[in-house]
Amino acid sequence: MTIHTAHPFADPDPDPVRRLRGRLGGAVTLWTAGDLDGTHAGLTVSSVMVGRGEPGHVLGLVDPDSDFRDVVGATGRAVVHLLQWRHRDLAEAFAGLLPSPGGPFRAAGWEPGSHGPVLLPATSHALVEVVDVREVGWSDLIDARVVDVVLHEDLDPLEHRRGRYARPAGR
Image 1 (cartoon, rainbow, N blue to C red):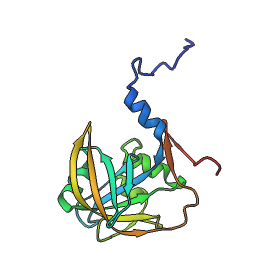
Image 2 (cartoon, one colour):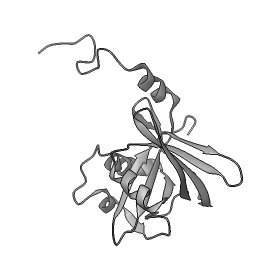
Image 3 (cartoon, rainbow, N blue to C red):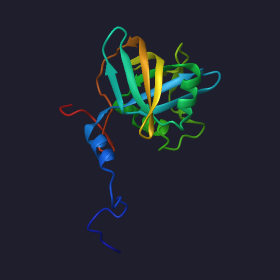
């Protein structure tokens, strides 16, 4: 057996921009689009920002090669869910990091919505309409206008920091 002084699988030349992003941390969201009876997709997104105004905007960095990017590009609408601690496995499934036989939508309950599938039991979420999409680095930046916001108690939010899910400090 070999004892390593460092992590044996660590990148010997870590990307400083990726490390900076990991230290910023933030809420974990699940973006869904499409029709439950037809084509639909979702993606876990933690690079998100909200801009206040009339109307408000949600900005998210998404994988340009994801199924979600294709579906939201076709529909122009999405639902942005704020995930809770209990949704850790769901977040992993929609990120493509956890096996999900039959697809990640089978890992939770859903109801059809005007802007895409809505997670059940309901979490805080926003209905959004895409205003602009542009390439930023290796991601696509989706700028979406907020159409409606549904807020529920924020008892145990799911956060992401330095490559791990976490509960907010002080909880």
